[in-house]
Structure formats: C-alpha cells, structure tokens
View 1 (cartoon, rainbow, N blue to C red):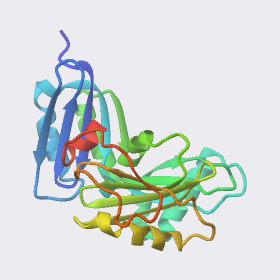
View 2 (cartoon, rainbow, N blue to C red):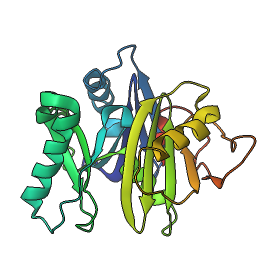
View 3 (spheres, rainbow, N blue to C red):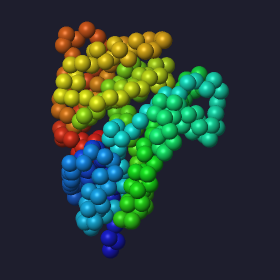
View 4 (spheres, one colour):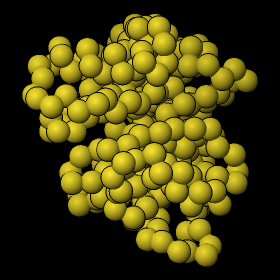
Length: 255
C-alpha cells in the first residue's frame, strides 16, 4: 500500500496559522498556530504537520492568504502581448509601486483584452521556493499554489460586475469589474469594525477611477463570522453566502 494518499489535501496559510483539510475519504482537519506573523514562519508548522503520515498526499492545493499577496492592475498595453511581455509589464508595474523589493517576487498574470490592463498577483519568491521544496520533500507531486482571491472568485456570479469585497481575518481585498474586465484592485489591513466603514471605502476608491463602475457591491467574508449590509443601506449591497461557519484560516481551506 502506498504511504501517500490519492486524496487531495487542502492547505491554507495565513499569518500565524496553518490549516490542513481532507474532505474525501475520512474527512479531517488540523490547525497549527504560531505567534510569528511572517509567511516564512509558517513553513516550520507545515513541516511538522506533514511529518505525520496521516497527512501524506500526492495531490495538494495550497491557498495563500491575501496578507502575503500583492496585486497590480497595469496600464492598458493597447495591443496583444506575448506571455513574456505580459510578465515584464506586470513586473514593471509592481516595481513602480513597491520598489526593488518587487524584483524578488513570483508573479502570476491574468490576461485581459488589450484595451484593459493586465491583472497581476505576486508573492515573495524565496518563500514560494521554500514552500515548493518543503512539499516536494514530503512526497507532494501534484501541487497547486494560489492566492485566496483566485479561489474565492469562483464563488462570484458569472455575470458579476461592480465592486467585490473579499474580507478575511485582518485583511480586506477590493476589486472592481465592468464590461467583463477587472478595472480596479486594492488591499488593506482591517480591524473588527471593517464592515461599518465599507461605504466610505467604496466611495474613496470609486473616486480614484476616471470612469465609474457599476454601483453593486458584493461582499464575501471568510472566517470572520456573519456580515450584514451597511445600515442604512443606501446602495446595491449583496452578501455572498458563507460556505463554511468556520473561523480563521480553516475557512480559507474549506472554500
């Protein structure tokens, strides 16, 4: 019998916490915590968890908290670009915002029609390499690593347009979409009063755009309990149902 399960193991990484989830076969979950907040500090926790044969799996899906991800929307290239050119444009846009630090990041690019900018996501390359090596050392051969936004976006309606608020413990990501293309992105830390300040946040970010987005706001909260529409509700606010009642990082793995 193989020591490695054919089932898919879901792993979620967030500041101070690692969550492991197995949903097929005999469902199980495990959470490990640390007082450290860096992405690198999670590798020791994950190494400890995967040393247990009960969590051996060849297929692994890793979800990274948005705390560890930086997004950028590039200027419109005005023409179709090759993959190499897309990577270069996203890298240049990240460096313009974050400086030379961005030169050491691993980049994912989402293509869009040439009249729109490219959406880029980046994580620290050193951390990504260490994570790849750790998973390989534990026999994981079929591995996908995605930012939370890539996984959470699957819950949006196909016809979605407007503002998308993605909230998790301690962090909020905000994206705007119209005419089938992403047209805005932002992220910031949050505290427990984040929901009450949403109307002000949307108004401020909308003021940064030369052309308005559809007014609807879709709110998706993960691991932080139920969220209600702002009161008074003066707009088109829609609360996406939470798939799981779990709090913390486990909710990211369950998405």
